[in-house]
Length: 96
Image 1 (spheres, helix red, strand yellow):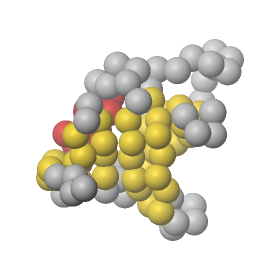
Image 2: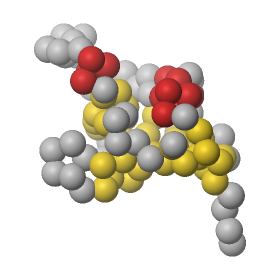
Image 3: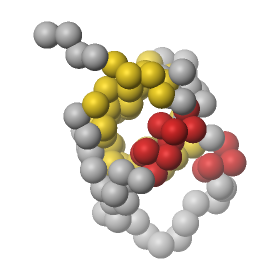
Image 4: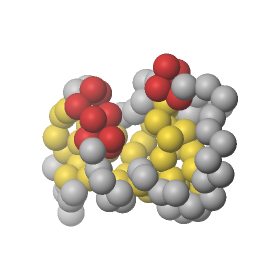
């Protein structure tokens, strides 16, 4: 089965993730710390385990988005600089 992939600009993909309204989406990116490829099923807006304390830095200034990793069941940072694939609402996008 061949899945058609549609090209999309990075800024559009980031906005789609921000506007995903709690929907589960798939992303692939390169980890900033190790350089390894990371695939993740995630969603935004999860409040589980949030203490209300906040972060010590602004993730968006470092091109990061906070997401909830559905497999590891915890919050993770998504590196938007190296984002290269997004699956959302039954569509598969390649970041150009």
